[in-house]
Amino acid sequence: MEIIPQRMRYDSQRDPRFAQDLMGSSRCKTLTQCIQCGTCSGLCPLSAYMDLTPRRVINLARAGFKNDALSCNTIWLCASCYACAVECPKKVSITDIMYSLKRLAIREGLYPKGSPIPVLAREFSRMVRSRGRATESRLVLNLYLKTNLLKLLGMWRMGLKLITRGRFSFRAERIERVNELRTVLATATAEAGEGPVP
Amino acid sequence: MKYAYFPGCSLKGTGRAYEESFLAVCGALGMEVEEIPDWNCCGATAYMSVDETQALALAARNLALAERLQAGAVVAPCSGCYLELMKSKKLIEEYDDTGRHIRRAIQAGGLTYFGKIAIRHPLDVFVNDVGLEAIRSKVRQPLTGLHVAPYYGCQVVRPFATFDDQRRPTSMDRLLEAAGAAPVDFPLRTRCCGGSLTGTVTEVGLRLTYILLREATRRGADVIAACCPLCQFNLDSYQREIKRRHGGDAEIPVVYFTQLLGLALGAPADRLGLRRNISSVRPLLAAWA
Ligand code: SF4
Ligand code: SF4
Image (tube, rainbow over all chains, first blue to last red; front, side, top):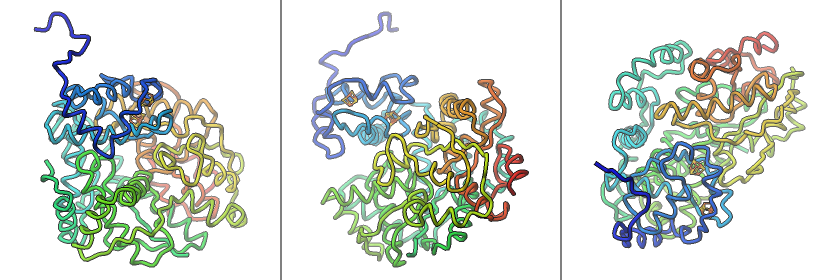
């Protein structure tokens, strides 16, 4: 049991390789420009709910604290509203950095267990990869079957409203040339020299 | 000029009323619009969170299909699709290696990605191509005395903002004025609605939505106008739940800005999907339909 909570990070917890790779990647190179002013944390509509504010994630990530940067709930609560990226005085592409961290967290299996947000992202991409389109009603159904059965039961009223107004799709959408799309996606992954999507 | 219409998944599902009213408005304005055949999902924020390369390829296939239509521009009413397509086009242009991978992938599917076609949002097209004067001249039923909170949401102007101001966009205000309505001053116009958090971390998502509803009411709005299916869904569908959690004022109708434009242009209510709204649009219909 942790008796005294750790309020600071130790040098030994750093992974300098992680920081180097991150700052070397084209989407995250602006990390180095951050002056820790806190503008992003101040205006982020979600920072009140984050375990680490966006400013702290930026700093921990570039210092190489991989575990903090990838397992915080911050990156998943980020709704990609771009408010921070637009107002950052040093033009740090914060939203894109959050995206990169999300992808790394999934690849490394480091996302917070039990959080429905990464589950939704993966379900969504799986559905689109295999059918070419997302059907919202089915997506929500799959999500709650996987994460929160009780919540599904609590949503019957909403479901009913959507059904009576013709906003609920029973049919799963699918494009005609699914094979063409699958070839495109597989080729993109191969061309980029990336591993299969986790 | 012909527009290649990219509906995106929501406009065929929970956001059907947006498609119906958008097409009705285009019809009333005499615009030529053709749906991109066999379009696929834009990828949205979710795909980007899992695999960027494939997300870009998804967007690029749509653009390649649109370029075959010989249209002047793609028009994407969903702000999420609009941003995802713009962002992908930009990344493909900006990074040579990314561009090469994506072009080859599209080619493997038997298509060609030229990256020439522009991506536009209906707000942009209505204000800058059709023009406010032309719209004003086609209004049959001015929405006189209707106080509207114009809600833009985040992704339609951020981060690219090609057609409007990033901090204080006004294109929807101007369109509503042309339709005879009175937009109220709504400072939260680009604040995040919570996006898909309403479905995943409901407690957090609904609070963000609640803040917007409360502010619109405070500002004296009779109705909120949205320009994105996710914003409209959040603001429209959870009002009962929000009231249970946070208390607060009476219901406020939440519609698409195209539904209001459509009413002003004289389109019948059933062609505008007005029976699909969950918040009560009855007062609106009583006065203008
Ligand atoms: S606003 Fe920009 S410079 Fe300021 S702390 Fe955030 S990322 Fe760093
Ligand atoms: S993009 Fe993400 S981190 Fe930035 S302000 Fe919006 S929610 Fe917060």
